[in-house]
Length: 404
Ligand SMILES: Cc1cc2nc3c(=O)[nH]c(=O)nc-3n(C[C@H](O)[C@H](O)[C@H](O)COP(=O)(O)OP(=O)(O)OC[C@H]3O[C@@H](n4cnc5c(N)ncnc54)[C@H](O)[C@@H]3O)c2cc1C
Ligand code: HEM
Image (cartoon, rainbow, N blue to C red):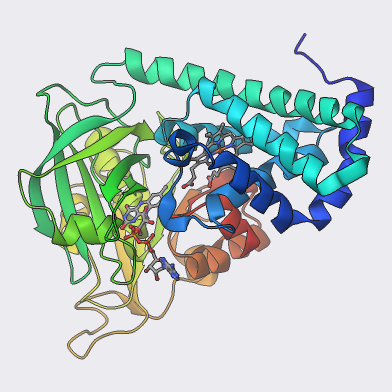
């Protein structure tokens, strides 16, 4: 039987949650201060988003509190564990890092609860933390072993050489990455991302996820990156400071957002802006491996100047009768015209999807900016699409999207 927390531990943890929750930002601050005292742990985190309210530390503290709230119903954790475990693989978080968070968390709880942090309460939190940490470490070990044992697999940071750099639109550029060691790459699952460490403008390294925008193969990956002019350096480095021959470092493909191995039901791929990258990987895979599968690639862009990879996507669709492509421009440019440069003016809506796709049977895959997901994910649910048919990726920490 799976190990269980004792009733006493559950009660002690549960009773202290309301006070800790009431001091949500204090716990984040206190954890941050402890955790980043150690430079080696600090370096694991993403420093562009850092700061006392840095979203990563916030995500971690929020996840632990969320877990404590659900401590009697840990079944709800399944999908969350999977998402966090994949993130941790990308950031190369190892079992030996877990004690640092335990120490920081318990010290933060002590700071906030004051006298109420009796030895019994702290022991209970310690047990509860390690219960969750063991679940994560267990899953991460399985994922790591699986990745390492597959052809082309590796562990930790590996060097890649940019073997082509192609401008896809005014804002998006694609980079093909070939292993510098001359070896093969692991075949990713279409939809997964790579994690890079890239120089920041102000010095130091940023960890950044980029979805792989090509179908799985043994030789190369492709990523397609939007230039964030006001960012701190990840995308600016790739756009402005690399050329063919530049080397970058990446951990293996990770992420729990991917096309199933043998897709059977119709697939609707919905993307906004640069959120098209995992969808292009899925579309390439469907075009190559599943000729009988009905799939709809539906993309929203501002206008033709920002619209990336259209020719490639339409080329793929032209190979198969069962693939369709439709594009929406929310802010058509002077030379844009519906029917020529794109299919429709405006935004993708659920009413349109209902009338133009096999709505009752499709699996929906979505990726795009916050407003895009915030508009479409709840609307699909309201229109009766069950949550197990709605799959989405967000290009940021999960708690940011949930908070939105
Ligand atoms: C799973 C996943 C997959 C992803 N896939 C892709 C992909 O395929 N293609 C892609 O282009 N991106 C992708 N991303 C996003 C990518 O990881 C980066 O977040 C993105 O490139 C921005 O990084 P940056 O370093 O250039 O900018 P950042 O420094 O992270 O800045 C991003 C934006 O935040 C704002 N900002 C930054 N710092 C501050 C500050 N101090 N104050 C106020 N505002 C600030 C700026 O407006 C800026 O435009 C993905 C993200 C995830 C999580
Ligand atoms: C029980 C323990 C832990 C929990 C509950 C937890 C929870 C989380 C959560 C919720 C995220 C965000 C996932 C997402 O946005 O999709 C995350 C990401 C991350 N975690 Fe953990 N974590 C734990 C342990 C650790 C440890 C031990 C470390 C390293 C010392 C660590 C480092 C990171 C990093 C670097 C990220 C990536 C942040 C990003 O999205 O940019 N975590 N973790």
